[in-house]
Image (cartoon, rainbow, N blue to C red; front, top):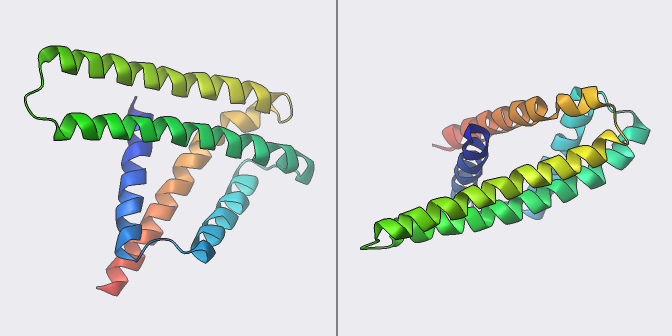
Length: 150
């Protein structure tokens, strides 16, 4: 739950920072993706053969994650902006969010299974730590860039 909230919070902060810099350009997105590929490949010590099968699966997993997270953000926004909600509305929303979190776990389980067929489990084990480390570095970089513009 904490990791999901961290990812959502990180996404919101990143979007806010990017909005201040007139949104991401295609060039900036490509730069971000290249940095991500290089960082993860190095952190996980992926061989070229492993990277060739890892990245399509990982990107597909992340796309599915983003779809679910978008639904979750929409529900949070709906609840936040709604007036005069009943207890039953909150209860329904909680059950909905728990179901979405289960979808995220199911996606992770499915794709970790697929990844472990082509990449050693020891490398998949380090994946979440690499993601966290990369996001922290990216956040710090964006923070420094925003601070230098002021």
